[in-house]
Image (cartoon, rainbow, N blue to C red):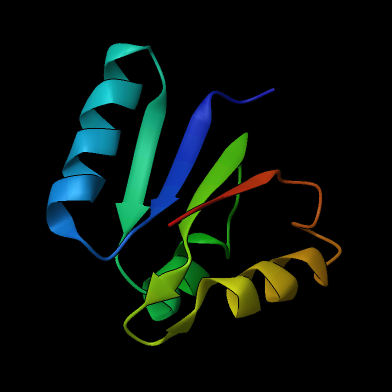
Length: 83
């Protein structure tokens, strides 16, 4: 299993804190601040988990979660929703 984490969080301070702490624990972290950016990252996924903000500037994190879980190529990636 990969030790790569995708952080989808629009608040820069929160995103940077998550990146820093996860990196210190040995995770490879990729991050973005919107659903549009997240969709780009999810085109070639190899994530062991996604940390997903509930409220994003271009839509709902819940809607993105539903989109991910309905896609057979990425639906197995666990998602932790942060708010």
